[in-house]
Image 1 (cartoon, each protein chain N blue to C red):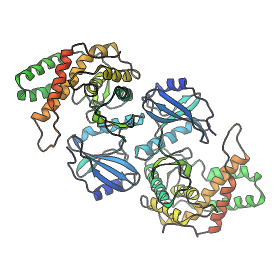
Image 2 (image 1 turned 90 degrees about the vertical axis):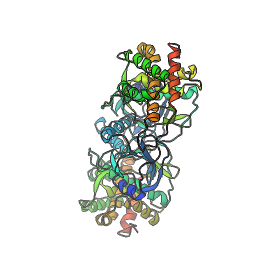
Image 3 (image 1 turned 90 degrees about the horizontal axis):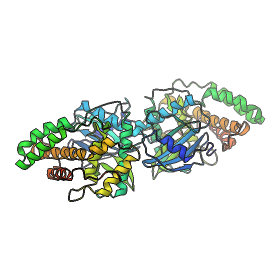
Length: 315
Length: 315
């Protein structure tokens, strides 16, 4: 979706009077985003992004906003939320829960090379390390419980072979013991379009609204499935190793994580197959979501299963 | 002074292992700064400035670091301190209290035009508004008490006419009632070289190590005396009005502030005459401070006294 809820310059300028960032210079809608209405806001003191939350319940928002503030405070290039003159991050605009965040520089790279995969690994390790000291906790909102519920919801719409694939994979994942895997807050959606490159440096990691607590390795698996998958669905060895090496240099991966890597890649593929199948077969009323192809992740899941243990890991 | 205390790359890389910002890529000393040793630090995740505090007592540092964090959290372009993995801003390196802050973009403009003075006024109002909700308090370390003590210390080194000027001005300032002036945390040293321009926008306000609580108008007076003074010591009307207008649009100036403006300009001139005279006549052992000319501010003080009430204010 793009901008759902309109915001007038007058209403925003009035709202900004409870902030310390000057008065409104320019307001412009952003034609991207899946769950929120987003706007570029330029004030007399800087450049910000305004988000009106369209679907997330207000009570869940402090987890995300405080997570971004925590990570920014630890020196990471994430969109730091802006506190108003009451020291609050979350306000109300056009009747919706709303927040301003710092606007970051850069643009996405949809064809990253190995050097950039290394930098993404380094960045992810930084997010995980800083996240270890974050004081709030929320289980991954697209974790095992959500996957089980969503699988039952979409199953009737799938052809027989996909139902079999789904049943088999859910049974396989239910048998995986993740207790030995280091856990923490993960981004859980670090696709290529959620990372801004400013020249050859990471300018920003955005869209934390799927973050939650889970195995840290799951985050790497989500990212490898997007950043390091070739057109035919195979994991590219060079880029995958580069991603893992960048991460490993900051937060050494363990033997247990090596052993769990194939299963995590499957779990991550399953998660996006399911959410896309849900968006496709069970669209929510009035939501203008850009429906992405569920078959892409069904095929990635099939490839990861076929590959067995023959999936790239650290050199 | 420039870099006082050496830092080795190995020691810094080890120190960085308690941060989430990756490993050391480049370390470079900065040949500016008055009280601290400063270094540009590039890591695999970003660009930072490392400061080793050479003169400020460790117990006073949290006020400054938390102030910068507070202002950054409110969306202002100040050097946000970076929290380590223990969530602390202040550490120890080479035996000195040390902190990392985010490196800001831009450079100083020593000949700012009226448009830039307006932007500085806007920025200062933002600092003052956000500062109203800062939870810590410290009186301006270069306020009336410091001025009285320092005047007695430097008085014996001054010629007779300057002693008279000093005595007269101290007596005049002692008679000023500042109770009606809005008070808060002020930067107190926002000279042209402490503001970085990134293109035509304020990229950063730096060097908060003279900040404290005082009349907000004193901050504007310090800044006007530097930004808006012509080569002959007069306040330029256009630039001064531009500075005040930029401020007034965000935090309206009061009648009491209008009345106190000439006295505040004198107090601000006195403060820098005294600190420069102290650095000149009473240099501290081993300190390689760049000594600035005290006479510049003596002459500005004389001009402000001579101008009486005929000093530029809002149009």
